[in-house]
Image (cartoon, rainbow, N blue to C red):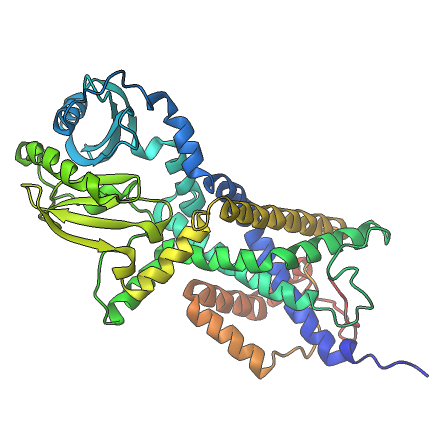
Length: 454
């Protein structure tokens, strides 16, 4: 008697093929971006260690306990950069370290390393040219500004589709064991091995990857701007976002100021000495930036720029050094706290080295799954064709699936618009162009083809 094949009946086969096609298209578009994000993100996870290594030549250089006043150090930095205005004075992590002074000049931000005793400028670097700044812009906007940020957002959105459809395809409907489900089958031939390596590896890192994709959206130009509107609509106290959106300023100091910042002649640098002396006992998480008044904020500000954002806090001071106000991360609006935890975990800074290791594991797993997918596609791709899974006649999305697609399209507007564009383009344009239809596998397919598996 022939066994029933419920998991592989024709309706299931049609749904399987339809989802496989979307998985294929999602991967084809976003894999190049995903590989770039995985590599750059893995390196950026270790930003604190890398920046400490780069700054090592300026650490522990003092030979006595005598120190130049912060105002003298800032004056030396301003003199070294013509036309500069103070952006921020970074409190040295150790008394023997060089002072780091951020200054704005000609629409660009510069970081000056100043000797803590002689107030001699040791080095000046453009803030946007520092290695970790360049890497952050490559990771978040492909060095293309706001347009690049939107492109990365679109790729991340399609990567979410790739993961979700991949989990559907991975689901063990006809499995007889754990092989190919929880571990790759090593003795079933190369094709099975590579298919299992792709599916099993992607399954094990899918949760981490989905978290990284979602937690990275607040940085994106389009989605981040929508989140800003949600923050205003929520009715909570609106404060400046503590994370960059799109092509953002190079540092927290630049985000604090605007083009109407106080000119050099109007900056009371003597007040800096009083504010620094008052800020030190507050024990804000390092690094701490002391920023002068601007058109946006009339008081001096001492702000923690800690990589672990839930440790951040800030204090406002009058020019005489009197503490005017102090806030902590816990006092921020709920949306900001949720995003702050997500950003800290995304950057590998929420719970120490274990967080960094998890990020690397997710990135490496994603790279392995993508490389295996490309190899599978390239080897089975028919000559002169893209190799997309051909559609099956009568394939329809269930009501639940349609509602899920609609919900994702609304939550991720760029994805929703591109989904509609791809679906309409395939159905009403590409099918009517014979050469394109053949290349995409839209013509000459077998409507009775059984459920092919990826």
